[in-house]
Image 1: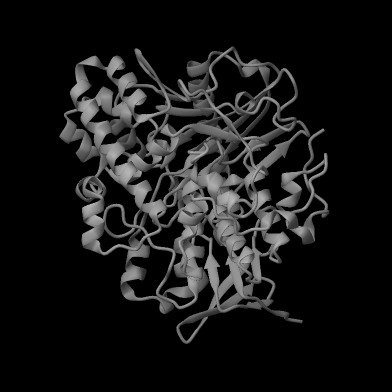
Image 2: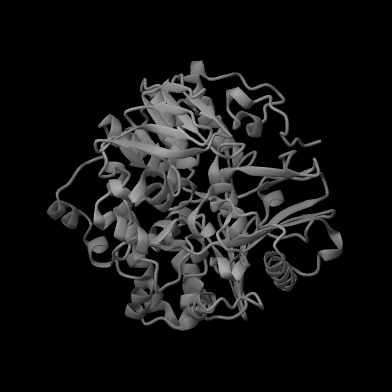
Length: 558
């Protein structure tokens, strides 16, 4: 028998944008239902466990701007979650270590210190480096100021308030490199962290690069207890204020009648009705599959069909039965040579063996007191590289979102094994030998990522191009009552970008400047309604939703 339920709002997907939007709607009095096809909420913030001894973060490797003035802490505080998520700061003198042949640069907190560090590393390019960082710092400052102002400006006023952004924001990073007369070596150092947004200098805009760089230069942090605590805290706020999270609940269709959203149809045939639907699903799948292109104008459909996605990652999840040699609490960005633009050209040609680049995140250094990360004396770290997204490259036909069972496909297994070996070889070049100490090794590909998140191209970074340079969809759509959130919107990628987009969506629905208000200290959630956390509190269990919290199959530590 088909069941029908009535809600004030339905959120499809429980990534950071969806959960933030849902929680703010719930604390504002809306009856909210969140539907998640996976076993746990969190999207790219979720974790998984292996061997009852190791917990691996899927997407939270570090967070920026989590100090007293930080945007992400303000978003959580506005829900009454003060103190429920705490952040451990990484090394302020060098939270990212960039290494290329003959040169190592430790990236410190602050634009001034960063510029000084760059100039000392590349003294012959001091003038170009200062021009580059000056423009990026100005663009980032203007963007953040406007974001936190909460004001709606005319185009003329916006141009007057953000003159550097108006001149440079939508131009490519490569154009800014050319303007500053920088060498390939300097470009490689400056764009070394570009895998944080999955685009090379000829595709990424100055606004994107400036915003991401500024985010971390405001301080780099790691959430104590791992990325799952972010989702769990938002689920607590949602449920405490009358909302519901239902996991293992896949939406098959977003219902549209007479030009307005009316609810969702589930894979099992059930229907949930609401005058407001927020899709945190992949944007292209939302438009073309969940809603259907017949409900959108030709321009939106054309842009979506021609959209380019940011590059995806392949990740090795590694546990060792020994501690790594002493090193700073910093991520490692390792490059085989000093040609960042050549690196992205290789990727476009699907040539990544030998591996030209690695990003290494050391979870057991960032959160050494967390009992779930690894046993005492062991190590837990992730090794990542950007890689081609095409199904042909990975030896699959349609991909897991279309239902393809790919994991026993011989072509897929061979490609995965080949890349695993190449990444291990590069990792030992970067870190020294460690293979004989491996007690757990697991590889995730873009196809793996698509399987769990249904993301087009298997990327965690969303759209690289949707129309003109730097263009991305807003959270409001042309269909009345339908909104979109997540890493594909104009508010940016990553945990904080998605959270800000979720806030922006809730602000449009509620017609108030939520982000500006919470950044000034406003509280909308009632902390007295939140559940007490006992000694066995498990963020992974909380993130399954109240209805499935005690269901079988939850991996445990110990």
